[in-house]
Image (cartoon, rainbow, N blue to C red; front, side, top):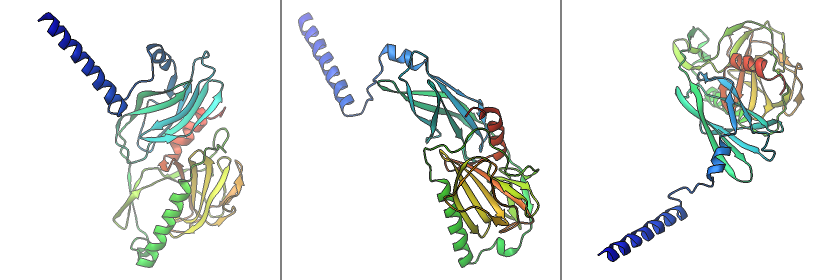
Length: 315
């Protein structure tokens, strides 16, 4: 009996081993490539967000550092909210990435995943960045009826304008044009903040995707950092509009300009005049609508500028 039981036990062990190998080979179980010592090394990679939490529309910087004894370490990707964000090396074993959250992101705990390579690949996930709740204010405006109720021909143009701006902000390149802290395109008061829910003639519209800055007609508008002009277009709603590509999925947008002084494809430097403030398009008076887009998501320009001032000095 003992011999039969022993044989049965051995047969069962062999069967379980065969089953495990089969599952791994068919992809039903993911085989780990890390040994115990490798896992200890994975814990040695430091990943820190500048902010422990951000609101919808918020932005922060992720600092990544590898131990000095890892001269061959290389960070290949940073992912947040299911999308990759460009990562840049700042030193022998240091990297950074700028990550943000769109207005539609649900509050809660979210993960930052850093993929690195050191002879083999491994993922390190840090669940330390929270999206906190924030209630944005509302604003009710009275505008011309033609700026709210669009006939088919105008609607077609509005949709084409929106697509052109969206496409321009989605052309993500790996090259980084910007250097150091950003400057405000015009030194002025914020008239309407980011995230403001607007109602035109009582009809709700999408939340404000930028900030409105006070600017008299003809006031020079400056490029906040180095970049390439991705779009210069006359739009029905935003009037004379410019989009600057600063590299790595980071764009800035300027609307309602009275005059555009740049052309698509032109390289600009921080402080260059790109246009003059105005009230073209759907505007109740002269001002500058200024937006910031990161990897296709509109983020709060005021939060971005605060981050820039605090953390971009040596970048």
